[in-house]
Amino acid sequence: MITKGKNYFWLTGFIIINMVGLGYSFLLNNLWPLLATLSASFFIMPTWWSVIALGFAFTAYFNSGWPLLASLAFMFVGKPKRWWPIPAGIAFAIVEVFSFYLSERPLGITRGYTVMGAIITKVISPAHAETVSYWSMYEPSIDWTIALILGVVMGSFVSARYSGDFKLNLMPQLWRQSKGDSVIKRWFWTFVAGIMMGFAARIAGGCVSGLLISGTIQLAPSGFIFMFSLWVGGLVTTLLFYRTRVIVIKREQ
Amino acid sequence: MEEYLSRLANTFDPSTIQSISGPLSLSGGLILGLLFGVVLQKGRFCKYDVVSGLFRLQDFTMFRAGAPIIVVSMLGIFLLKDMGLIELHIPKAVVVPQIVGGLLFGAGIAIMGYCPGTAAGALGEGSLDAIPSILGLIAGATLYAEFFHDDWSKSFLKLGELGRSNVADMLDISPWYVIVLFVLMAVMFVIMMTMIDWALIFLRRTFNMFVDVTDTIEEKRAASYKNQLPVETKQDLLTKFKKNLSDLFS
Image (cartoon, rainbow over all chains, first blue to last red):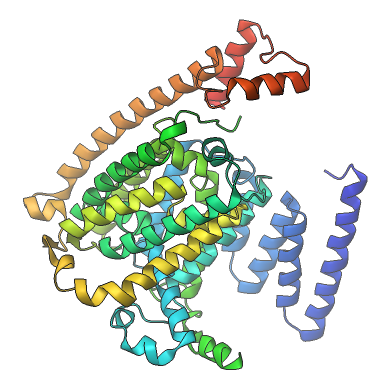
């Protein structure tokens, strides 16, 4: 691993940061400064031994063996850039069932965005938020779904950084091929599509994870209805929207 | 500014961090979110190319992953339900709004290329165009709550209401009959989709199909002129075949 001169620079930074964290940990007689610096140094240097170090630190902090076990598993499983679709699907299914067991509710993401809207409304004007009847169903308080969204962002970042798949980009390559180079156009269309999706999810009562997957796995008719109408809507829109240049897809090699 | 911050702090309830289990626990949500994010990133669900390729009928990764998702979690859920470990949380079925919402949602996915969950995953992966999409999702939900919910909650959202019962309850049979049927269908579906996908990869690699349809002739000519190289590099058939095989099975 450490063969180039460039890596020595980061390694020195890693050690210095963690020494500072260790010092503060002794000073405050608490483990969280070391935990914070270890997490920060994982983002700087995502290697297998920093994953293990994080696992040990979290195990010591929470006084439970699960973080170490998870980091050991992630060390091996997280290294490839992609999983083959069927193992990935099975892993998804395990997470879904685990959500039923642990949190006693299906995985659902869009509810979190709705609650974020409620929180924003309440922060800007609490008097107005009282008058909207919908916010009495979706109470403006930071809840499970917002933590879930935060976790998805963090988990995806960690996974992408560890496997070297992390790349900042303004627009996807395939969009560039089929719709041109304009970044403003892409961002405008994603915003419009986001409004459409947020609105549609509120009409239907859920999104892909909250209604389609969580509905079909419980054999609910709503999931099947949503699945087929989503498929039809997506196909028709693709035909109309990308009409001029539909054909191409370039996979990652 | 401090007023806003204090209002934001009021929305946070510290007692929700303590326990891991339960529908209100923040820590449980964070743990599940971490696992979910890793799975989404590794399965390549939060890539525009994959989701958009599904609707362009050229990349069936989502189908190949989606059928195992539904089948395995269906089996797991009903097994654990029969063991008494979990309860079902069936979403309410309302036919007309769900058809309309599905059509609109599909249109959104086709344009944006992310679903709400994978938009968060794409943000973690470094795709910055997930930021406007997340803002749009929040804006859409707020728009609905502010202007439409009061008018529609009595009329439009009640059209074709079926209640909170699943297909097995409606037909009054054991859910396992439906599950076995579904598993058989899904296995056949996965085999078919995998064959189509592999055939597409094979054709694309071996005969250079589908690759440069959008490049106009002028662009191609300019590229070849710039690099001073022929457009195609010659490979003998055996190495091409080996490359295909390793791509398929690795």
